[in-house]
Image 1 (cartoon, rainbow, N blue to C red):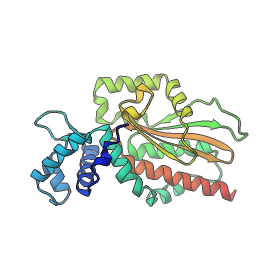
Image 2 (cartoon, helix red, strand yellow):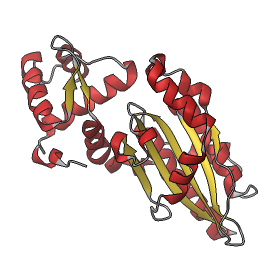
Image 3 (cartoon, one colour):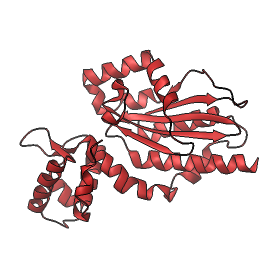
Image 4 (spheres, rainbow, N blue to C red):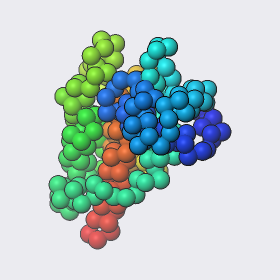
Length: 256
C-alpha cells in the first residue's frame, strides 16, 4: 500500500476528501467542486476546491474519469478516509444499543450470533455479510462452510449494473471455497478490525471490493466475520458495528 497520504496532513484536504467520499458513497457518481462547496457550507469557494482536487489527484487520493467530470475517490483515498477519519471515531458505539436489542447475546452460539449480526449489517450497509467458524467450542479447527447473507442487498448496488463486476460476484457466490480459505487465513488478532480495500486484498477476485473483517472469540469458539461490498461501501457504520459486537461479546463471555 502506498501511504503517500501522510504527505498531506492539513485539515482542508481531509475535509474535502471526506465530503467527496460521502457524496460518492451516497450517489455513486463523480462529485463536482460545486457539490463539495455546498456540502461543506461554502467554507471554501468552488475555485479553491478545484485547486485542492488537483492536489489530491497528485497525491493519489482522487481521480477523474473524464476531463469534464467530477472526482471520485481512489482506493488510496478510501484508505485515507478509513484510517484518518473513520477509525478515530469508530468507538462512539452508536449501533451498540441497537445490536444488543436485536441479538440474543447469552443463549446463542457464536456462529449463530454472528450470522444474525451479518444479516443486520447487510441490511444497513447493502453489502454481503459472511461468517465462518474457525475453532469449535472444544478448541478444534473447524472445516465448516462459509455462511453468506445479503446477496439481494448487494445486487441492488449500481456497480453491478456493469456485467463485469456482476460476473465476478456470481463466480464468487457459485464457488465460495476461495473466499472461505481467504477468510480462514486472515491472521488478524482476535478483537481487531481489519479493513482491506481493492488491491489490499491478496485474493484477486476481491480486487474491486472492500472487505471489513473481525476475528471474534467467545466461550472457546472463534469465528471470522466479514462484510464485503463495493469499494464505495459505507465503512463507518460497519466498523462501528463490528467494534460494538466485539465489546458486547467479550463482556457477555466474561460474565458467563
